[in-house]
Length: 137
Image 1 (cartoon, one colour):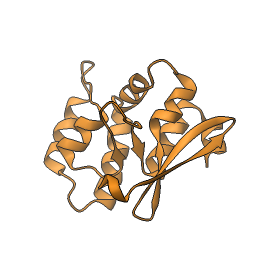
Image 2 (cartoon, rainbow, N blue to C red):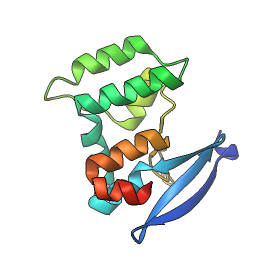
Image 3 (cartoon, helix red, strand yellow):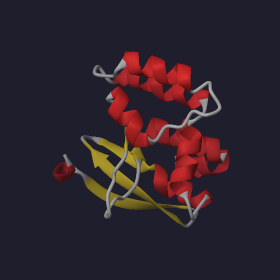
Image 4 (tube, one colour):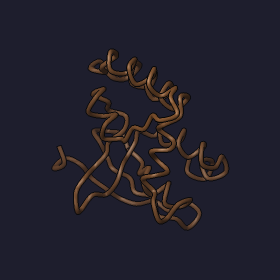
């Protein structure tokens, strides 16, 4: 899969944001967006967003609408678990448990971070800063 991916950058308010072409869609780097607001630990910002019930419902509905292989059984378990204060989920765990396609995490020494379909990336950006989202769009 990584052989077919093309990456580039855009600048939003003087902040470099990575773009990764997946098929015919430009996925946007959640990691780079998070770095604008938390340069030291952007992955924590992404995990905090994923902990929210409203986020899980949004990305779950997005997957139901766009992904025929979305694992609804796992999604229901995650949706029920995220109501607990102890709930934590990473982008990788979300993808692995649910067969998600809207969020693409990358791991390893040369990781470029977590990317998301524009619908999801704009939702994340809006959660961080509605102003930033409007510049991103």
